Image 1 (cartoon, one colour):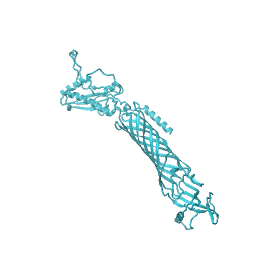
Image 2 (cartoon, helix red, strand yellow):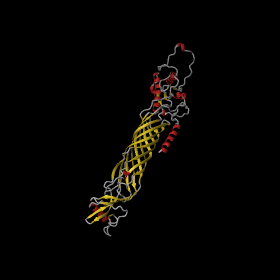
Image 3 (cartoon, rainbow, N blue to C red):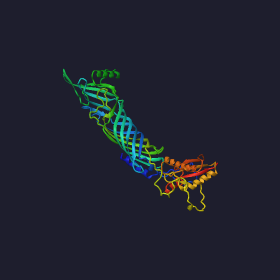
Image 4 (cartoon, one colour):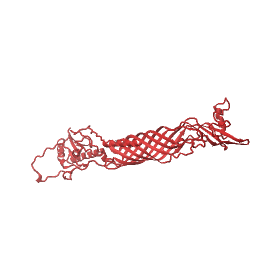
Length: 504
């Protein structure tokens, strides 16, 4: 268990120092671009609250400790009981938990939930035989002989209900891919075993008589080998004649049982199914690392592994008997005093974020010079006019925007006036308006903001006389950066709208 915890911590440390970059798509390239990769940023917009649901499937191994299977039989002799083992174990589970992450980057958090596990396997005992002191229906003391005809086997189905309290870790390497892990304690609140057995037993008897005629009593013969004068009601010594067969012997034992003797051959339990509860509280461990793939801004698919350690104890009765009366049966699970369970396998889950922080841009850059609040260009005073020839304006000049803004800046008015002029010259042309953002922010938020910027340009041009049907807007989000997103200068160049005139 300690090794497993150390391995998980080591893996988390490796992932913490790693990062992964993803190249932008290139299905549309409106001009020459600087080749740049996306910055690692999803941590800054991760949700503080999340809801996790998981399905697990794997293998189950149990280390079984039992009380003596013979201790409950009075004055027992010639006893033998095989080793109790658990085989063919499988485990399936489902859980749901609510998590809360701390800090700005949301790397670490805690979770609380409910886990249900359904486990199956075979509980077996190799052989069983015991001879002990008992009383028959008439109150006579005799020596009961019990023998299992074959290996005792129980098919076990276990319902296991736990409350997980876990430490949570997450790290995102791109907009889509990340690593997450849960590690913590499982507080067990229910352990129910349902069993079905194929056991079969022989119930035989040995009587010793003592006393005088008219005052004969029975006593317990505790000698490993019965006395020659004992009455033996056993399979090997009670053949009716040399020609008797197994059917005759079975009928003979059935008659004796009807007469009040506790004997029978090849007897199956009258109730071969039942339930056993472990009520003692227990604490286990859950370790669950996974790779996470975002399906959208709110739902992520988790694919990984799980390991569960559980240590159950049971108040096994000191007088446990697997059987005593003909047809009775008590599950082997009742004799278990301790069961150490180890389960591991695959885990598939979904994480739902309750919300994400609406951070579309990094910390504000130095504010530009004050600008007019109206969208119309300012009217220059006569004192400001001169005869200097204005520099030519190119329609390809990008229209830049402030952080998290879709308001047109005054510096872009000349480019927009040039767009109006060219649309007037080319009445049948179409103006393509492409909006962009920098890399910071969620995919959906960036796409909406880029579309909003493109529409702001379209609305301005429409007020200047350009017909709406001759303009088309596109919102590309953070795709196709014009400069590196690793610097504030590059991100400022990426918060833009680009115009392209399409002539017919």
